[in-house]
Amino acid sequence: MLRFPGKLSAEQFLERYWQKNPLFMPAALPHIRPAITRNELAWLATLDDVESRLVFSQRSGEQVRYRAETGPFDAAYLAALPARDWTLLVHDVEKHVPAMRKLFDHVPFIPDWRIDDLMVSFAAPGGGVGPHRDNYDVFLCQGIGRREWHVTTDEIADDPHASDDLAITRTFKGITHAVSEGDVLYLPPGVAHWGTATRACMTYSVGMRAPQRSDFLIGLADSQQHNPFYRDPDLLAVEAVPGFISSEARKRAQHLVDGQLNEADVAKTLGCLATQTKDWITPEGADDDEALELADTLLQAGKLTVHGMACIAWDDHSVYVNAAQRPRSPGDADWLRSMCALRVLDGALIVDTAARDCVIWMSKMGAFDLPEKE
Image: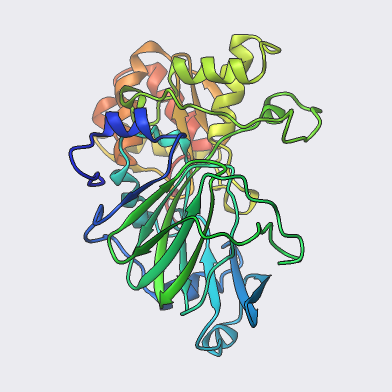
């Protein structure tokens, strides 16, 4: 788990900082493991099913404009990039390299359904994505190299002249943090920030997901004023049960939609949104025969590995896989909790027909690795 400053506990972090105030945590992760190299990140950025971007900082005196390109990129193009003033960003790294998911273990006090992805960036000296705001919480974990962050909770105006590709704010001084390997910066939604590499560096960004009101109420006008994001500043550490969407989360979602949906519809929609995957990385589901074969293998004291790109959650009444929903039995809690914690389903925990039927359905929804076809 993150090493909080002083004697700050996880519970105190949630009470004082989560969705409230930024927090700089020196040496919170002295050794980021597992890690990824610059070359491995560049290789990911050449793949068709990987979302990647290059952001160039184009300087003219004191003025900087930011230009973005989207991947996939040619390997030769990446190898020929200049020595300064660019950043390569790769999204959903943990879905393409499942071992990287272990970095989420450093924030066990956050319900895992709230974690969206691990974005990893490599910045050459002078590289950055410009001053901006995000609509989600993020833990910025510094890997190798050094970066200088500026952070402010003040209202900062947008700067439409700074980029044609990115939503950039005006520059500001704010509070400055010179970060090196192992330092972590937590930022709540809406806090303006910008970072510049002072030495070539890697940054591991654990970003959260937060549905908006319009995600629940189809047809709602997409206005920031009337289309707020899900918020949980009252989050408690006890809610962080592997894969579990708490009743408190449902109540927050109910409040978000101002009671315009009934509780059952809110719960179902929240579960589907929490497990929604991007189209190009949605796992392939098993066919009927494959699903039965997987269930039989499992019941013979075997194990099933959760697919690296699969998103799974559950609540008091349902289980959700890749935005699909199915009612669950009360006795399913133990194996669902274990499976979500370990990303492996142990056949010894499947003890009745109802659980077996649920596993078959999950297989069809793309929850598990499929055996290679001969």
